[in-house]
Length: 125
Length: 179
Image 1 (cartoon, rainbow over the protein chains, first blue to last red):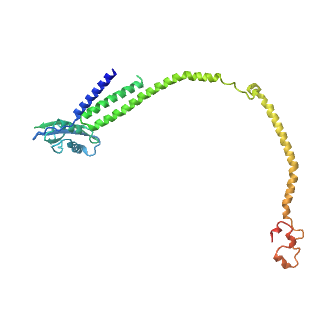
Image 2 (image 1 turned 180 degrees about the vertical axis):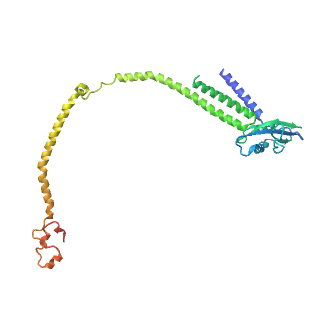
Image 3 (image 1 turned 135 degrees about the horizontal axis):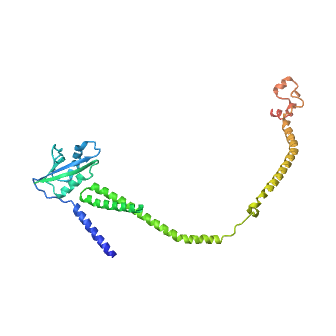
């Protein structure tokens, strides 16, 4: 009985490690020429001395390194738009792995006193 | 619901949540959050382990006390049984009703000490004065003037400038200091 429990624990541990490795593994995404990904995100700051715009630019300067391709600067939220967030564009479009890395970086505690939140990620082919 | 139960619940929930969120954050590629969650998991693990070990030690301590209690009482009884009877150096002091013996003892001792002091005082008065007078006279002997005077023995008045007279040299200790 004890050996069976040990065996079950070993199998569960192995499967967990393999599953976690599969979920967190980094792979190159297929590149589709002429496509682009538009990311809209917002920032929440707490006692950040330079304002939300500077916080968004600093956060994007750090997190843009997690994806390849050409990236644009941070566009200020347009007035009257539904998604009142900061917009950046990446070309060619990023895949699932790039999306995980980018969202993880933007929503992680990457910068002190700055918290990002991704509103939408759209890909134009 | 005692404190130990609440502590166990809090520790278990903290362990489960922090451990689960460590993997959730890893899946989301949020490394800073994963590190923080892992740190909380380790802290909760240390706290839970400390609590469990403290409980185990307390149980072991109680068990050892329970085992050792009977043997300890037996040893104490054996020591008390084999102890020699208490020695009484002053048997008459052991009885409180005989404490009034101190009054005549102290009075007798006071009379004896007074008599001894009287004898010592009388003896000192009779002996110390002659001895002290003789000693003082011997000390004053050096201050006596020369019997023939300071001018005796000088033939010429000019001799006085050369020093004291030879007769005065042997007269006292003050004069003997000069060459």
